[in-house]
Length: 513
Image 1: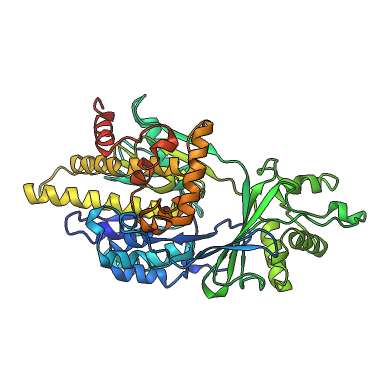
Image 2: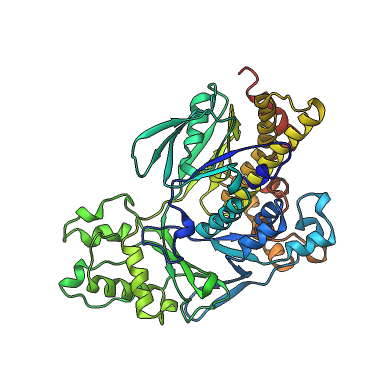
């Protein structure tokens, strides 16, 4: 929205439909129903937001917490500092394309990542958007409004507001951007409208589940300036009385704690793992005898007492001793958040095109890796910047050639095709890099991967030996995912298509429409 509204060529008015309430009015410590964890904005996000102007990035960064330290806690006494500051990458690995390979860009990429809640990120973008364009009626933001259906061919939306509860059809719009995540109604609309055999989307739930808790302060045994991955300890066995058998405990499966330092000295803890069971169970209806069993998979209660809170706190401390010392009031708040929150299930999405008709997809709606790569928000912001750049560029080209009288739909169609041609390879490459090759690698293949990983861990591309680790390239550079994936062709056992193959295939995808 920022990019298009600032363009002298597009001359757009924009309507935004947001299912959530106005996040600018919410406190940092939110209700227990929230599963939103802090996001890491790296150089990809920074460059995308800065493509509007530097002041927009400064507004966003001011609401987050800079951090470039990562610690693995194998046990309460054994820790490994996996990252301590921004790693300076060899020039060939630091930037996206030769056009950015200069000293100034290299210094920009050396800035630390910013940890920020999604609500704070969106609030910053909305605040500046409204301050710049709200007065001239060029932007309209509708909170508490759910898009239930979309029409990719003709540009209509079906919306439901929290106040009315009824469905209203609005439109037509010249263009619809589907940014609604893995359950995007716009992606469903494209699937329904595109001719059979053209648009293809694959979605799947990933194993395991997660819950999120927010604390006003970092647990005292953890570094307040470092992201921490805390592996679980074996829970202590304690004698149980009759009441204890009905008390809530954490999942009986594998569970880890991912702890992020956030702005204001607070912490965000993501508990994730595989516990088994159906996360959609309605535990409120569970009987007392079944209470413990259902909580093993979802730990969710509609009502609980102080005894439940103490029991759950003790179980957390037993599994994660490094959380001990958390103030009692903070611990009680965290437990309440966990006990009233449904488990989240991550999902993966990949599509062979990011557009059809009047619609395009951005972020998780187009490609999702369920947090495996840690690049969800970064790649989504890159999508947004590239989409706006393609629209702006196409309108600039047409207005330069044909003046004010242009065919809007034809111009938008060319822009959306250009967007797909640029970003589909990036989405598919990130999917491959996140999940690895399909099927089993042979013995020689596994040995090659092991040796190259050891080499890259020791040298990381320094002295011309090896290359930076994959996660370092993803999180600390703006190098294209496609280039990173092509360097690993041997590992995947097949070549990733080149840019020209993608361009030609996408240009011909809807030829007969």
